Image 1: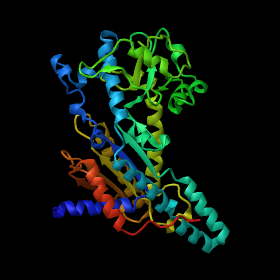
Image 2 (image 1 turned 90 degrees about the vertical axis):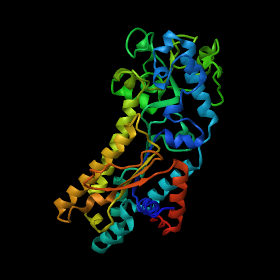
Image 3 (image 1 turned 30 degrees about the horizontal axis):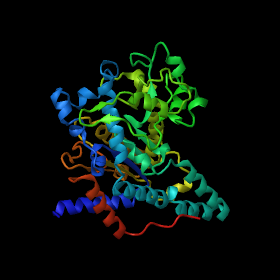
Image 4 (image 1 turned 90 degrees about the horizontal axis):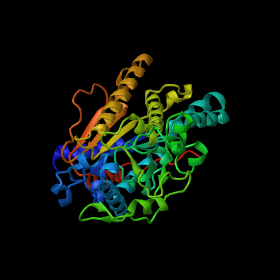
Amino acid sequence: MAEDEDEAYAAAAAAISGASFLLIAAGAGFSADAGLPVYADIARCEAYRQRGLEYDDVCRARWQTEDPALFFGFWGHCLNAYRRAEPHEGYAILRRWCERAATTRATPSCAAVAAASSAADGAGAGAAAAAAAAAAWPPAHYVYTSNVDGLFARAGFDAGALHELHGSVERWVELPAGGAAQGEGAEQQRAPAAAVATESAESAASAERGAPALALRRVPPGFVFSVDDEAMLATPGAAAELAAALPARPPLLRADGAGLRPAVLMFGDGRDVHEALALGASGARYQAWEERVEAAVAGEGQPAAAAAAPPARLVVLEIGCGMRVPSVRIECEDVLRDAAARAAAADERRGTGGGGGARVTMIRINPDHPACPADVQHGATISIRSNALPALQEIDRRLAALQPPAAEIQ
């Protein structure tokens, strides 16, 4: 291992060891270690080659009406392939790191807060201050992913701390004729909060905001889409089989399943579809978490006793995010800049210097494009040129050799 590579892994392990919050940002390169294709390979097969189609040609809603066999063949093949894949070891490693952050961050250093408060007000008041400070902080992690394969959910990550910004092939909706989220039949398929609460909190939230959210229907476990994998076409009746398998409330407009589509953003989809798939509500929940984390790292709104505590630290861990659809890379860089600048500014206002930005670290793991932005004025960046799984395994090995996590405050 080269010296600079060794230093990068050591720095990554140290950053994660001291993290109060983890933002896990994953792209197709993370799923690739589970045997799934990256962007460039999703539609690379002979059937599509003969028709002159690439991924950004096939991944469009217009095929639902122009060539249903192609449309359901592509998405049915994706659903089947994703369900055959198993979450690799990297998912379990990330879950351990999330648990570590939740137990070691001491929220915000409960021991220090309790000690400082106890000295002034007695042990009972100190414990109360620590509890109040802990309650004020957001959850220790969030997953932000462009992957639509549903593997994070299958690996046991909390749905309340998971933003699949492009949706998930595990959930389907029925759109009115023409694929629009508005128009004839749309009212019946909109999702009253009570009707879909068990299917999707996001859909219910969108309905409550007045957005035209549609009922999200989760594909039942064990369902296999009928697809000719050589021709990449759905077999006759495949959409009707899916319709019969999906939850029946609210009733579908068509029993043949012709109006069904995965709750996934496709090329050419407009803002109305984004809201209809309840992705706006999911994104709003993530943004609220991010805002609270930035405030915590900046030390804003903390009890006076928390001044004795070590400051909160944020690690933005970006894994396998490419350049062709750079949404996740852009988000990670934005979070790094915003959180670090806010922490630095807060320190300057308090007269403690402008070093608060050092409490924010971005780790970018990518075999082809690991470089971090060069114009970051605050915050730390670590670049690791590697595939996802071996990099996580190496960081985890080094993390285990560091100081074991402190016990939770009882």
